[in-house]
Image (cartoon, rainbow, N blue to C red; front, side, top):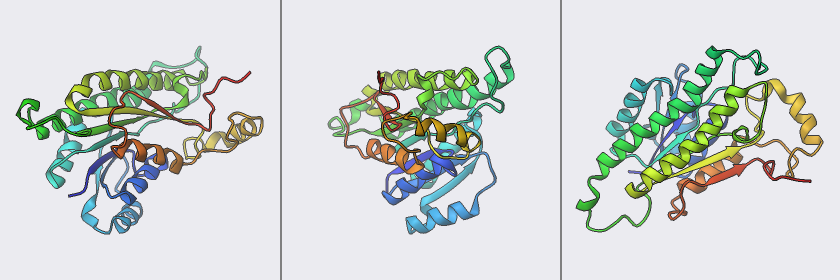
Length: 264
């Protein structure tokens, strides 16, 4: 049985790029998303996997804890193991509003999906990983590599202020702290946790502000002078999911063309 990956929001944008890469790397992939089952996307992924049973789709919301349990249980029932959780699903505010005009409804929605949801999905995933692994003291020797990996997809907005979408920035800053918390708690359990922090990536989320970012990129927003692509983020996730960094946890992997580098 191949390694098993759970990818939230893995049916579009950055998430679809991650799903494609993980399937290409030999993972069985289960996607959690709120939309009706995307037949064309699943056909593509199943063809790439070479076995339709290696790609699953669960309709549900990362904001719903009952859906967490259903999602994780579906993968365990189908494949009997859990190796990777990619907390990718996220939303921008429905309306970009100045801090003085922002609403609590938008704040609650954005943080519920971007921060609260991944936080508790990680909890559910980790509990099941530990259950499947069994007590550490019962193992003949400590595992040679990670028992499982969690990758949180956050944003350059974790540290870069946008005063017209404060809720989004706060949610991504929270993901950064959640990564540190889970890395510290799960390290002794054999689970490593990382954060991938994208910059300006060409997806439907950024489509509405293409002109603005085109101008910023032309003015030197980042040393690598182009838009990022979902495949760029997927490559970072693939590296961290490969088990090649077993003595690292809590790390932040920037995928922003160097945008995070302070430049005078």
